[in-house]
Image (cartoon, rainbow, N blue to C red; front, side, top):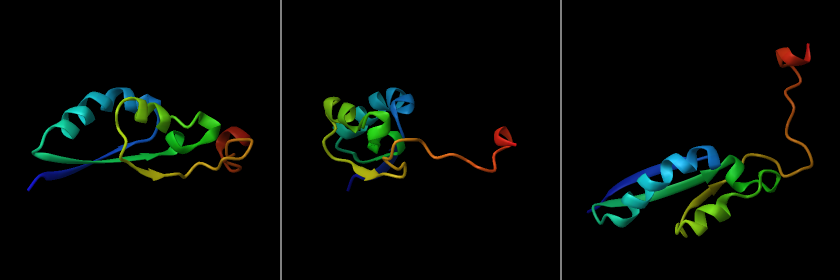
Length: 83
């Protein structure tokens, strides 16, 4: 029985680091890779970089979209920068 390993990637910034490890896990029969894409990967606002993950040969993944696809990124109204 293969060992299940889940990997979460939230955008290009970490996918470049995780891609080679994910490829090794995907291709090794001793492991079952569960790839989870969230954040910028799923957002039109940030280019839906999940398409890049597909181009890298990863067709199966779970999507966790948590960034809204409206015209502007969310604003933290109580952040110190706005005081």
